[in-house]
Image (tube, rainbow, N blue to C red):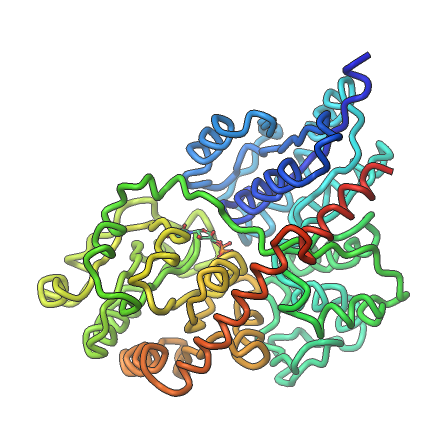
Length: 481
Ligand code: UDP
């Protein structure tokens, strides 16, 4: 009898650290904030066998399982025959195809969960769009968790319209695109997989954009006062072709609450303890960001010339030219002596620290010594910077990051731009100039003030009766009906 009154929410993140972490944080929020009388609610997280290297995912999952046993992880088997990453044109296509082939296992798992609990909501990541029909065919209300911001959501809701209005690929359009609620977007700054309409990833993303409004609702990792213009356009229904927009729940910022990679003892945190307050520039480029050897050298020279203190996460350059091919990423620790200018580490010993591969970013950003953040503009990184009140320098690399840069620099004024030269390289002189500017200039100060104001708003939104908690409660309520 007890079993039949159990209720479940099932989450399905994409196989990528950033997406996994924010979905698990969403699970924590749901469990923490849903009304105590609903104590029979459980949250399940589906984990696909990754076709790509998930980094420290298993450590992360183990630590969450240990601290929050009410989050139940289900490891889905490999689809058969397994995909061969090397034969796929891009990481995005590989992930979509993999998710598509995993559908039968998703169905089996949903059915087995429903033997014990009534599934109130199935919440999927954008990359898990192929699973939308699994949810709907089982009559489970299926929601999206949109892991970027509301502005990017407006862009995707409007994508089918943009697509219909032209026959040229965005990469060749050479114009500014006008999307309701957004500043004009240079067509070349559209999310990377949508740039070329002849490519397979383009059709997967267009399919995602078309399905978004057909879901039961969209949970967005933002807060109302961060992106009011985009949210207004979305709720006015002007982003979607037929005007039908499902309920939108802005529950953010959903960011990592505790950082397993921090472990209290991370060497870089100890180093930060010895640095003066607010003086260190932190450079980190998401879970996948890598640079060529040439670019690493430019960064090193720029940092040294700037005279600023720095903490810099460095990875080996990609093994192949195609940066977006995940398999081209090396797991090996970078050989700093061969990658960085001669004696760079010795000369900068007093002022800088280079960390190989990965730093506990949330803990670093909230350390007193950190004063600015050179970021690839991944949405989680952006929210983490806002929550820590740290001004940014925007250096986008992949996915929707160029778009995020436009938004951060032009509209939200939360970042200064890092600009590439014609060949795509960011020069040492540009690094030097921007790093100085963000740490010590009028423009840098005004960005800092703006970020601190947004930090206050983010805290207010996440407080007990704040807009994000209200939206989360609404989602849980709507899922119960
Ligand atoms: N991250 C980290 N240490 C690193 C690099 C990344 O902890 O050295 C974390 C970062 O805090 C964020 C996530 O990885 O939570 C990256 O997500 P984001 O959306 O910024 O970028 P993505 O990796 O999806 O491109």
